[in-house]
Length: 247
Length: 227
Image 1 (cartoon, rainbow over the protein chains, first blue to last red):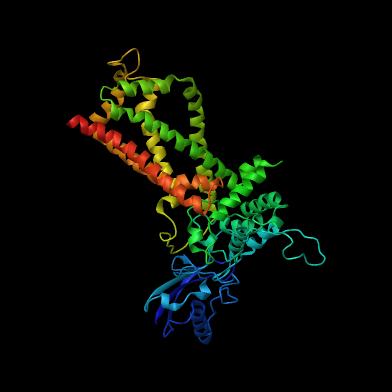
Image 2: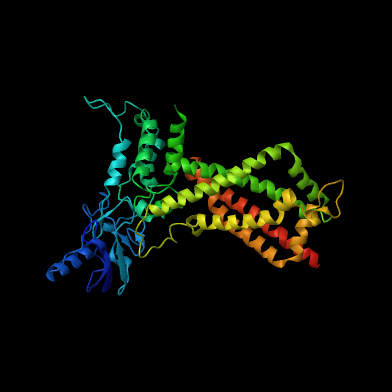
């Protein structure tokens, strides 16, 4: 495949970025999107030019490191996959592909296509945990949990924190991310003792970091590579409203 | 309380509650207006309008309704501004169509259009009935009940562009409602995967009844006058 890439280049946080256009020839349709970018970078290195900086780690869709807004969609045109699992056969020979970093006030660009997603860590630190006493491990079935509940908690816990929800949302809202993190704990008895404090602290942190509010467009759920449902956002709303009713 | 209202979910909570209040108001409003369709003499509608204008419970609810409108509009403005600030640099290319509906992305635009319609609508009827009065209200009154039917039908029969404005108003309101109904419940936390489908279906039924009903009234009055 022959491709034209329009890639966002930005020196650092403060620099003013711009789009650069690159041509690539003989890309295998079976290569992944990141492998295609590797080829581009090899080409750039050969030309003594600065390679394009982009985030990636496991390349098997579980770490949440890769990002990229490809042709107007988070993680590109394929459904329910991260960018690393996106294959070039999803594009046509001769296509022009626009590649942009996540755009959100809460995710400042560090360099080129890499954004700082530290805000998600800060939201987690505000309450995305349970407090347990150290000592010997608890018996696995010491607390019985309904199968449906544990399945739902597991679905929420599938969030890899990639930030596609924020990138897609017209308001740059982190509600789906937060909903996943609150839900996975709120559904389980181990998460209940700190539920009130957690909901309040995590929502406050999300707001403080400059993410927008939820308009319920549902775009996040469609673009989420892990198909996290907006039903978890309803649970987060419920948790937060009830938390505020308690003294 | 202050921290609750400062939070994004707290603001959305107010949007949702005021929105649901307006949703229930629209249904009552439509039921009263539909009297225009069922009685050509206008007595039925005039009595209904008179009841709404004099009943003590309705008198108490009216200022609350005004507060509902103001809160909904005020918080829509605050939230929209904050949401705009949340993305200082926009995308060069964004395909939103495959992940969300146009109405859900443009609730502020649709709401602003509804607000413009609301101002026209209040100036046309409510203001005249309540404050400034009109010769049309005085003519052909029965038992001292103001002839609201005469005022409304005269507008719809004499000026065709008023009919168009009212039909457009109904369509814009309908688009706003297609997203509003389920979203209001979602924001209150009263939705899950099963209830979402039910609420969205109910939302469509409600929207078709309300938007369709408000659009039919001016058209019916105009067309039946030509027959």
